[in-house]
Length: 410
Length: 152
Image (cartoon, rainbow over all chains, first blue to last red; front, top):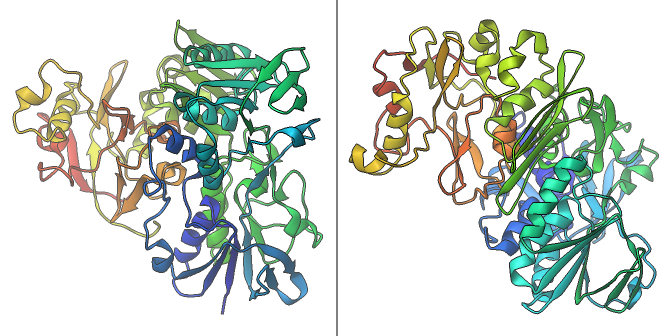
């Protein structure tokens, strides 16, 4: 008999559960959930603050999900150690959970750099979990001046989520541009301008030298007074459970294309895992929701005795602020095809007969066709690039590919 | 989500498609909730769930393939897309309009409605058309509704 244990209860865990159940309808699944909640959509916490969703609609799956999946959840509990020699997980209430197949879906945690004087700030928040968002919601009011450290995806979504509910939002980042992990300088400038038009103030290429109570002294000499501080500098994969038993860990828990770790019987998925990024050609943590689900689903099928690989992981993000959407995918290498207007920007990066990456701002129609060129490594010589570079259309594919894609007759 | 779900889907015969765009109008009307086509469509931008692709001398209509391994469902950050009985459905109450499905769909089959919420072909199962309106209204029978196995 198999006994499945999943540590973590986010989207990777939900994928793992659904993957297991697509193969094995009966054997028991136990989930250890540190958060005292059913699986919810973490990327929606900013939408929640913005009033675009609510706690019910943020549920990732239906209310009877765990019941339907014949799955037990230990809520509010933390897995302390993996006892590898006896194949058990030790939980912080003293329970020992025996497993035959274990999936680590432990996610990541906010990274807080050692800012001088941070201990003199009374109101500091992270922005990762729903509890973080609910705490921040309690901590702000229409008079609050908010300083967000970090102009990445998390920091800026937080800014968008609260800007209408507070007096001011200031964002600072050591990088010289917003969204520096996914946008190049010109694209970032376009997005920054849009964010500024919606009331957000930036200190870029600058960082906090020290805090003195509710004043941030910046390296540039500027002083920023604030009431509420949000730290969104970055995250780190939660890898300790595997590391302490000698499993292979880099930035994340290293996994192969079946989501197996270096330790037999143990799999990993989601933001804690480091798998192959086929666009980059190297293993790295790709902390995006689609990846979490697909890794989890793959792990689940393989844990239950199936044999599938997930070998199409690429970085890809769709992120909108105040109605302007940026879509990015792959790596930004090679020749550039560009189209620009006042309010939109398209950049396609091609190299070695492949589309390697793209940045699309304000021009998102059918972008998935571009994404599929990267994920499926479709040779550009088999496509009319003259057509597809201007407009993402399957009409640019050869009749043979089109016929295959559309079921025979086209 | 896996398994052999034999079911009917919408297919298009590229050689027969005239590129008349009637399918787009019939789709928008069928999903408008109104019973007067003039009231539903006249003088307004339309938001169909099928679109005609055109390049050189080719035209053909594209709508959701209801993939066996639906990347849109797996990628949805709001848990709004799901597959039930072989049909990919969207819960528009849950959708927050993040466009991730647009970013991943290899067919370009999802697009926002007039409110920025995503919509897609649900085979006219949730409206009063009875069968896919694009198929019913295609003047050259280029669009058909039949069983052929699934797209991957």
